[in-house]
Image (cartoon, rainbow, N blue to C red; front, side):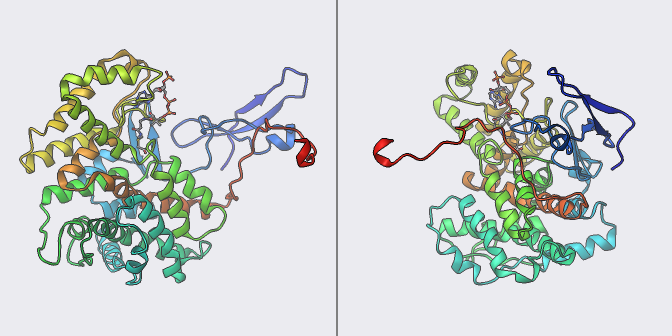
Length: 436
Ligand code: CMC
């Protein structure tokens, strides 16, 4: 990176000498001030819990304009990718930087398809879990365990190992998510089938049984594929930053991705789709559309800690473009299933309308995010609520890998090691127990 001609000058009110800091311009988006030499030159750190103003890396993968409500993968708008590409093309784009041509698309699809089976021993490992374990608990364990099965792709410094690990993770995640689901249901696992598309294969592994095959409806396959595309990457969010930080120690890619799965589980992040659907069901039980006013009142009450799940975002201060696409898919799926009058969808649209007109949400720029409608789509398809976040993890795996590989290939990469503002006790001596 070459610094721009502009410099940022930092001055202090206590007479300490001011310093000039280099400034870099991105291809789009805000400039960044390079503070790497700040400590060396001033003996001071910066303080930014939650990374509100801190860029943790330079990246070429995903760009979000939160004010405009724009999301680009490698420069391509999410709307065009969702309408014109399938998930595996988007995976190729995220990992290799360009959309595949016909030959690259065929080869990549074949490579992923032929990596979908998991080591047979995995199912015995799975058996150690309780049947009622949360699928995200199971998935965190299974993904971490991949490093115990695929020793020939664990050297993160080796580009070929990284590529094989990427193919394996993208290919095996649907198999693992479906296995976690089947295990919870007490049903036999369904092996992947190579004649099906990535998304159709996932649905078949989820919903077929050895007694009865499952022929996925095209509209539903396209909906699942779109869910995957919309969740594939989202620049430096909590789980991606976790993967980068974990991977910065040089650990193997499977371990780093397992850390991402664990982080995604939280309700402020990937767990929001599950929390959003539970919230809609609660309002429905309370009386449905009639009770929206009462619910919104609780959300606005600072002492209630109730949030409107599926609303708000650290970066988007406008409608999340993924939410618009998800709402469109919601119409298509409910229409295809003859559920056009689905009460939960009606409730969600009524709640959205009221929130978007309410000053509390307007003044805080709180709009629906991707999770607001994705739960309704998944539920209509037959995905149980407790599996929603695992489906998100499946889709986000490619983004995590692309970001991890970008970091390892970056000449400026270092192990991540934040500093702190220490506000605890200064040095003191241990007293004998009788005097404490
Ligand atoms: N319902 C009610 N109030 C909200 C909400 C919400 N969903 N989100 C933010 N606020 C309020 C918040 O209380 C604060 O108010 P005040 O200024 O009076 O204290 C103000 O809006 C700013 O919020 P914040 O908590 O400072 O914003 P943040 O950037 O730290 O949090 C968020 C972002 C996504 C964690 C938060 O909006 C949230 O918890 N939303 C609900 C959970 C959710 O839908 N998460 C999915 C995010 S998209 C998928 C993903 O990327 O994983």
